Image (cartoon, rainbow, N blue to C red; front, side):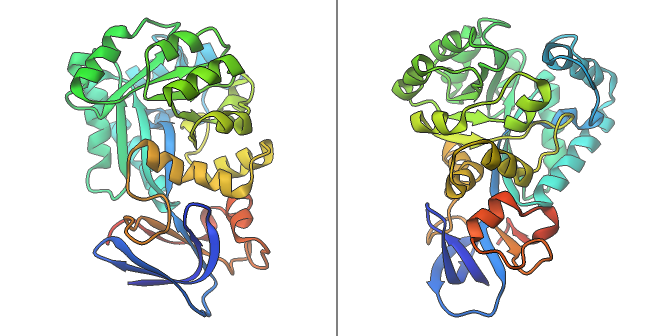
Length: 340
């Protein structure tokens, strides 16, 4: 299989006219060549933080605070999750996954509520899909970790989570935790747990970030969600000076799981360059998951996204990477290659 057009190649997403040769699900070659194709070929996205169980109640909770929306056990989302039937939850998650897959997302890191049952429902919704969820379960660690890919904690102000962190380590699985979303009070306790991933870090200061660097902890940022809940906005450029930063879309009932929208917002919010933002949506998430893709290079897994560079929206672009990051959307998707 060959994909012709403008290739956003390598770790710096250099725009190369040519073709990508795919054999047996792997990128066999990236070749410079003249082509008449207007397509733009880039890595598929990794959504580094989601709660897609919330798909049952999109745009619920207008005017509520963050605590009223999501705090366990009686925040709005938790009440709605308890009230929904299994079939409703599975169907709603499946619809969100279909949207994510169709718009170029390859993998996503899901913080899944509901203990073992919650993880099993997400697995059911994902069955048969090329899209790959990495499920961070929540609840009783001994019950959840055998079926989850890792443990996803709420925040260090909600509980101590030491036992859960130890259980994840014993199981050889990652531990992730929200930190610095409402304020800075839970950041040091979260870092004390030596997590494999921190989520949000809106209120991080240099003291926190020095510890993040020393402990080599990546961060998932969700700026659209943070704006919606009124907690502030992360300094994405500063965070990326200290560690690996990846983009996530957070709760589906607050925001669509669109990496196009997240990239555009992050790019226009921050001082980061377009290649840096595209890296946060692709390469960095793949590195966090230890996946062999996220860049268009020989020997990488061929999980790729093809955009129509001659769409009404993109025609006439002058900078391919800026066009992808700041302008492209679902209507520009021509092909998503997640299977050989």
